[in-house]
Amino acid sequence: PRAPCVRAAGWQAMQKSAKLNALIVLIDDEKASLFRLETRGIKFVNELYSRASKREPKHYEELQKKLFSEVLSLAREVNPMKIIVAGPGFVKEDFLAYAKEKSEEIAEKIFLEHCSTSERSGVNELIKRGVLQRVIQERKLSQEFDALEKLKKSIAQEEGLAVYGLSEVRKAV
Image 1 (cartoon, one colour):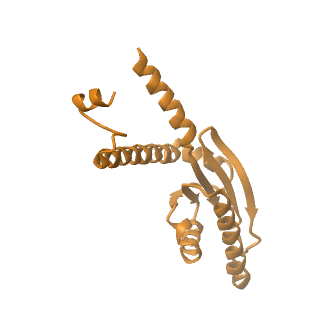
Image 2 (spheres, one colour):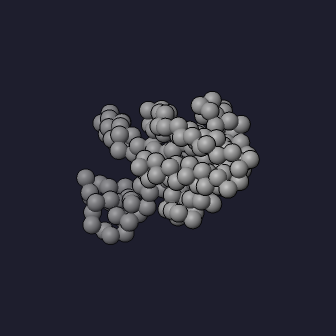
Image 3 (cartoon, helix red, strand yellow):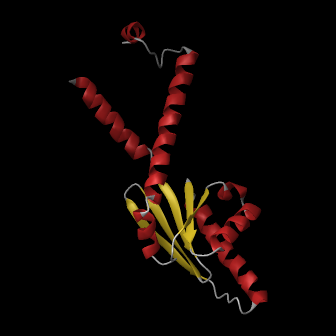
């Protein structure tokens, strides 16, 4: 009867310490909407507007880079584990190229997805397509892998902090 309690307590501690933290950036030519995917749900972060117009190519590129810079700045502030960049058209690819140029650390966290809008409804579209569920699953797998590696390392060091096998466990207890 004691073992399930220990497992439950361990699971609760792991849930508290292992917080999900991903940034969702819905972006198009005119704006970027940012949301934070957390353990408790999705929270609105900010909406940034670009006054860029493709009819004025000189100003378009400059204003687009300004928008990208602001998004990168917020991404650094939030410091997410993953960044999902989604939207219609090719702006998301342009943003990724900009991020690679300005911050390789941030660029490595970016995953591109397609959605039809940069409005708040775009988050619902990503949920329906299972994109956010994949991010959560990848996070869980990563945590489990890290825990397993930590266990293997502890067993290899033979300090008695971790053991396996029936006789070894009996000795340790």
